[in-house]
Length: 432
Image (cartoon, rainbow, N blue to C red):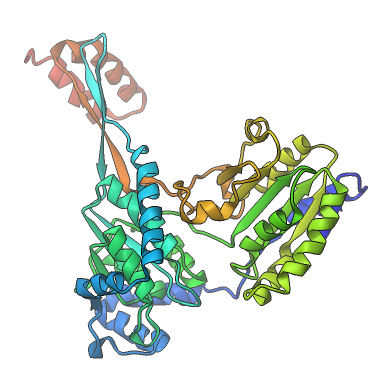
């Protein structure tokens, strides 16, 4: 963990290095992923089966690749009632929030009598990637699936790696609550490729969403254009802006809530109070000693954590904007005043009683957010990621007469005579 202060003579140099530092850089996987994608494109199910044997340790021929819906029902029935209630609460809140994102069609007739507008429609099939490695995240499943359902997607196809052919029942239960239509026990770059191209077994998707490892992220990046994607996600991030009137126990826990995700996660505290900075640094060490995820959280905190002291909290907002963090907590007495000045953040958590972890599970807004400073130009997952807008235009005789000559002039100026003729022939026809 590094300590910085805006009063330091080398602050700008060191802070710039923090902003621009690469995290999660692994060996270049692009060549391997490209080979997997090409193989799946050429051989379809046969390639998927070979990669499943290689990476997940079971032969799909000995086990149904598609998981029967009955298994989801059984998993949900067998779930601890309190956990089932928690998932149901999360699903209902996520749905309620995303229902408000549905766009409306528009239509107008202008002064020349020309009718125009836009119509929104859902994609036909959405592919959902659900990790099945070191941990199961039913919350991510809900966050990815429910916006698609709200958008009106007819077919939601889920893929998830199942080492040894076994799937976590919690994932199956969450899929049942969410309303997933079909589930396949495949993962990795080969699963993304199967969704992008379609195989005899796996339906072709129009959009692929969901988190994954470096191979999954690279597959989505390479296949974008063949299929739509949500984003290429990187390591998780949190920035906290806190004033003096905070419990260091709370702030330390919030920082570690992201650090425990992965050794490449990043947790940063800005404060204008030196005493709080010292107390949080000490408390993080104390809490690490008690965390079951201490090994991962310690690696993240040591490599990527930072506590930065500023003269005033307004300065922290400007510095946070340079980081454009995935998550931003405003743990201050008047969070709205600072929030009004925030330009770049994936999601903002207002006040001392709104930890980011609430947003991960039951808040309602989506927790699939841009990382790696991408909040400068992109947004979190929403209903719109599963929809497309089609514009329409209708000219009558009067409307065409009013604007057609201008179109002809522009077509001639661009050296496109067929464009011009397609208008002039109608203008001269006299047809209504």
